[in-house]
Length: 269
Ligand SMILES: [Zn+2]
Ligand SMILES: [Zn+2]
Image (cartoon, rainbow, N blue to C red; front, side, top):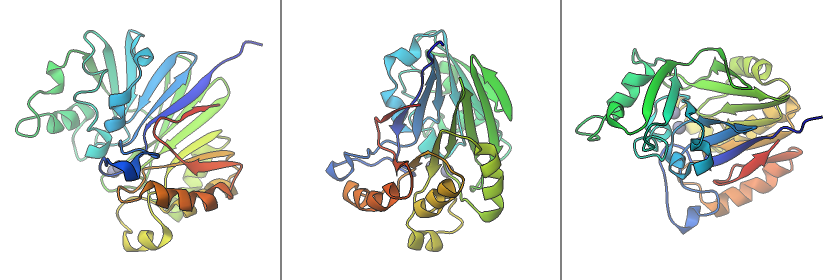
């Protein structure tokens, strides 16, 4: 039987704002971005500052799809100077849902406009094409699905299926009870769940309505759904490496392969 390769690289695991310094060197300070690859078909998930580390091999095909979960700046800030946006002639297919009456083109134009930024997306060297994110589509050998999560202003949770492997990318989401059953159905049978777990339990109570979840709550959800591999993403910008390491002991004990995502980590499925 032909052997297929499905992998995901975590390019940015931090949430809300990028951070730097020695306290964040192990889990990383770059904001949300991941690179999915199935037999050479690359798909970028979100455009946080992690996108600045996009590897060269992802830009060798004539076009590169970029799926955006939503337009909060921590998920877009890597885009304006990213290697893919600066690559002359590369077709960048950017998918995102209309939010607050602005389609994905207008969302990026809002960020990349004086006085916030000097150059709009239309002036970049890459050839950018904008698309409304559908509930289902196929990109090469990859089936992409999306569902609406719970987050201020809205968020798209993403599912990628290729060669019998399923990855679900669920960042920036409060996993409320009514959403849990929908997400369980959407993610059923997934091999890897990347999910927002920004808060500790006690913080989650204080920050209800901020649109994130407690790592313990989402890990419990994943465990009860039988998900074999979980990476908690969107780490709080104040959470140091040492603090994450301390929490990780408990998290790792909760499942077969549960952990906090680390910037640069490559997960082969
Ligand atoms: Zn975020
Ligand atoms: Zn957000």
